Amino acid sequence: MNTALLSFLLRAEAAAPNPAADASMQQFSLVSSIVMMVIVFGLMYFLMIRPQKKKEKEQQAMKDSLQIGDEVTTIGGITGIVIRINRNSQNPHEDTVVIETGGDRSKIRVKLWAISENATVHDAQEEIVKKE
Image (cartoon, rainbow, N blue to C red; front, side):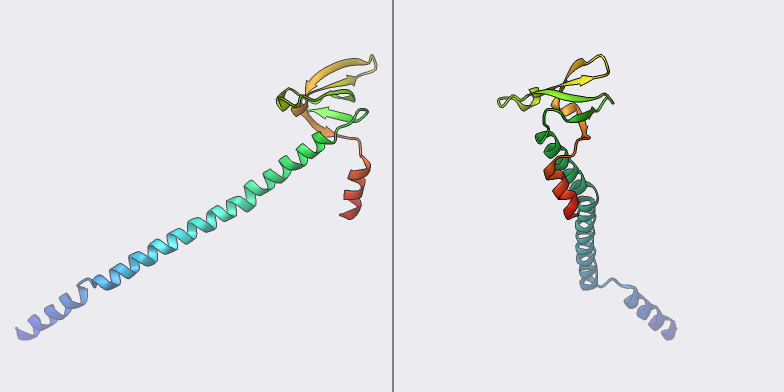
């Protein structure tokens, strides 16, 4: 009977939780969770946010360099040649561009933000392409 009691006490002592070990495991778990969250946010930044910002910057540069005579395409798919640019320094959302489309030389006024592509290559753009 003494052996059974001794073996029961040894098992109970081995199974008893160690508070110091539990605290260190919880601390390790917390640190690893924080590190994992930082890594996920870093990946999201480099895979999603940064390329989008770069694309927005390129679009803005294209719209700023728009000149009369450029062949442009709108987000609706209308192509034409720029004949007038109206820039409003007070409210940039009201900037408009008049483009001439088709053989009958019809004119359409569109917002500057609706221009999606400039098919005309300028000297500054040629230099950038040559550097790459």
